[in-house]
Amino acid sequence: MAHNRRTMRWISALSNHSDLPTAVDETTQDILDALQGSTPDLVVAFVSEHHRSEYPTLPHLVRDRLGDPVLIGCSAGGVIGACHESESEPAVALTAAVLPGTDLAPFWLDRSLMPYSGAPTPVWEQALGVTTSADPAFILMGDPYSFDTEQLLPVLDRMFPASPKVGGLASGAERAGDVALFLNDQTYRSGMVGLALSGSVTMSTIVAQGCRPIGDPLFVTGLDGTTLTGLDGQPPLVALRKVLSGLSPQDQELAGHSLLAGIAMEPAQQPYARGDFVIRNITALDTDSGRLQISARLRENTIIQFHLRDAKTSTEELEDLLRAYRRNVNQATPVGGLLFSCLGRGRHLYGVEGHDSGLFHDLLGDIPLSGFFGNGEIGPVHGETFLHGYTSAFGLFAPSQRAHSRSRDAQTRAE
Image 1: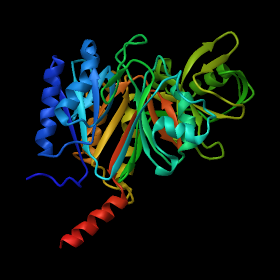
Image 2: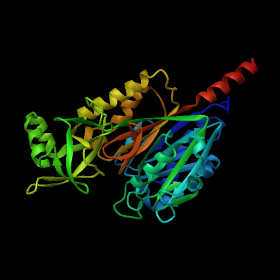
Image 3: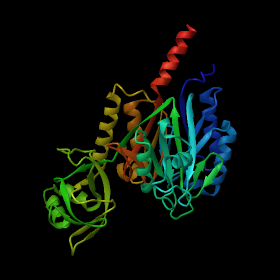
Image 4: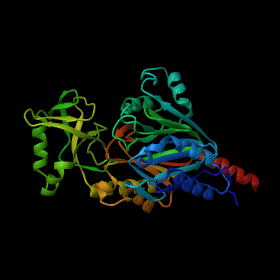
């Protein structure tokens, strides 16, 4: 029996076939079998670097088989789909969604064509194909070599402050021009592709940064651009050594390769806990001057706390976040999800494949999930959207309450 077209549905399929047309045939057939006569409104596609020579053919192969849905996606160093994470083998993952009552506005932004950050709202609405009054949710996928994602995100937050935004940077390439960004029939080699969803759909987000704080919070008391020249009135390296001296031998060893800096999102909040910081890399350390360089825009009196990243901490944080999501009685039950994970997670961090997606399914159930391992992850922390590293950012999709009400009304009339 065919499923009701008015019911939101998500299907995730994955193929590890080394031939791209065959992989697309396998995944699209799985989708058609599951939809039983329905055609999808949206397809999200992730393709491993093994298929690089055939990237431009993917949109046509998929849309020809699935009836011209809106298509968005990108190339990746690792692909996630159908309860499996493929990090080192050929892979194509497709998520197909039936989205009744949902408006889909796909867009491509390029550095040379993008409106300037202070452009009037109507200019940005035209570029994105959606109005601020629509309260959309955004899926974003960018090229790490040609597009400044960190410049765009504050603009989107300002224009669409209530809109959740999630996504990642394409991977599986070592130089500009090698990534692929898919949008409908097009394959772009630069810029950012995005999708604004509005109407009868909601998107909630989970952002797991996988770190734990060490030592005490410290005030930034000296800056030279992105270089820290003072923490709590002393050279940053002196402050860091005091923190490290109080750690266990195991954590001191871990700090040798997994030390990061956390920037407090709510400076007035006390005490701070895991998840209250945006995590950033320490990119340079000058032993002569005692300065530290951090990959973030900082201001004096910003509060910083050093963090460590390891598999145990990352697992605990993701478990806590997933359980908290499950306990939220006001949260609509998701019918599908996307996962944007860092190349530094997965097998590299945990020693096994399938960790984060497996934990997701263990705690939230059999929700179709697909995604990729990228060069950066996009997601909100304390209501502000950031480009992260070493993170897993989930976008979870459910019918809006408005859609539920319409469905109940239709059922009542039918009875």
